[in-house]
Length: 363
DNA sequence: AACTCGTGGAA
DNA sequence: TTTCCAAGAGT
Image (cartoon, rainbow, N blue to C red; front, side, top):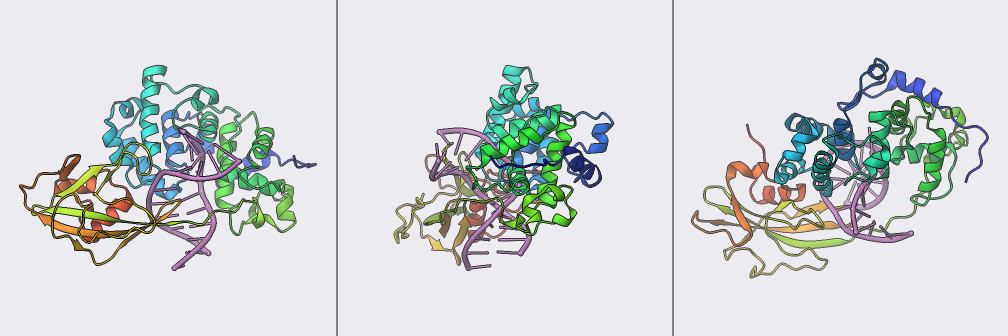
């Protein structure tokens, strides 16, 4: 543990938050909260799951869309899983969508449609880990749970000059956060920490001069804030290649199939294709294609970067008559429905490379 | 503990 | 162009 004389007071952070809180669609701001507005645990949960490793900008339209379509946890629990996957398409980390659905069903079937009333109960639900359980408990119930996300890790690593590199420093930082978390205004405190990390104590070029905790920050006072938190080195990103086949019918329908529930892009929809491996060479006879045809190479390859590898797809296109049957496990998605399919971004790119405009939503 | 698991924007 | 990263969870 890092020794320290002075701990930063929650009051200073909360004063700053009262003046500078971000206004977000899912947030009950400090003024509303003081006026007695009670957060809806469903909305807090929905936003927190969407925000896992995902930017506020990316989440906003998805949050609004989900809330409009499924206003309550009971609505979401009753929704077809396929519709939830379609609505999540493009947001990434698709196991979150499966767990979201499973969690909603559990809340309804095992908890009478109400979310568990504390962090420990929330933690037992699918898709809710240490961070999300604490965040929901703090924000929705004002429970003084130790909320530790990437923002908190960065802020506290700087305040206390934590030399242990992440992720090993997590336990140490959690203990610090538990000590700092006030019993009053726990929800505002949690959100204040995240706002501080997102707007002042940023990864690069932190605005220390504007920070309400600057005088307590060991790293800032030493002029080395940006060098915290310490991090373990990352492995470089390997390369993989593959082929994707965009089969289009004369009426514009596109041949699709569903990926297995588990693993990469689990449960999402894709165009048929090869395996993705390093050293892949496209079969000139297209033995891995879903149908026999005169496959034409698209002008450009599709490059897509996943978290742990970079994929280059060779795109092939062929046109088929309307009476050609879809192979086992495949279906012809009508032209008007392609844009609404549960297509991850990489698959939209693949289809666009062969059929420009085919995945664009129209009104 | 170390991997797997998306995406798009910023620098 | 490349790297980094954004309110992590599951295994």
